Length: 420
Image (cartoon, rainbow, N blue to C red):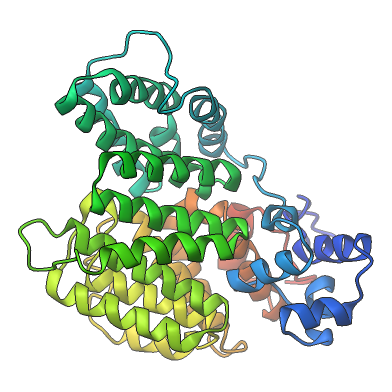
């Protein structure tokens, strides 16, 4: 830190507001026009561009990208340069994944011997577990080779082995999407999720088709392709509604249906369709009450995760504080979330929710943001909304606390406080 000025010497990360201003001007658009397209006031957009307000809702970021006819990544500057060894190792796994997905298809596979199928199936499951706990370097290590070998089995094996390989290939593609999305490479995330959808359809598995569609929906939304995300989720959800039996011995299809309801609820909230969001949350809640806590493919569907998604939807709807208070009055509210990724997501959304209280609950927001980062640092440190949230907390703080200083170092966000 530059002690004479009381500021960190590292450059700030993605200057989202400044990027919005540059792109808006290059497009020849006025503040009035863009604000009208987004549905916010001219003064609010001006404050976003100047850094006086931050992008703490993903829906707002996506809406502005759409209004400017650019991608969300154009505004966030993702993927970010690695700030630590773990990030560098994780990011290094992405190019081989990309090569594998573009060099191999379900109609054109390499004429090479593949490793034994049982080894590949176990590898895919282990990689998925790593992703669920936000260990992206471990999840992505060798994933390109795994994808290539599973494609070979999925195309050339006998019927029984081919179906086994296809199911494992879906899981491996979901891992690839999760790693790429969390590290900020949304194009690769969409490609991986799309391949998972293609394989699941060929396999004819309703559950895997649902999980793949839910994953694709999330990736498309983060990319800014919200209309396509809605079509993907809505189309598959229509097919699964009559197949979802939460009392069946195998509840996977019901779990996938519930996750799609949650995805559509979040999409609806981002688009301001709050009644639709509530309806889909109600459907997911009803399914979760009957399935109980489940964890097929580490999707963590059940009452605890539905509660976490309700909070995320409330934040997008601008009603975060009340929902956060309700959740925190529930004893052990995070105990049933086994995956570190889901626990971190809940604490992160609690932080975003309390930040919506206009400064009255910033101490709680800071506490939950710190907790989220400690649970799943790779997930939080590559999230542009986390960085924007920290900037908000810095702006409103009267002094630079140790917690703010520590988070600023970890997230590589320059302090906005001039004096301690």
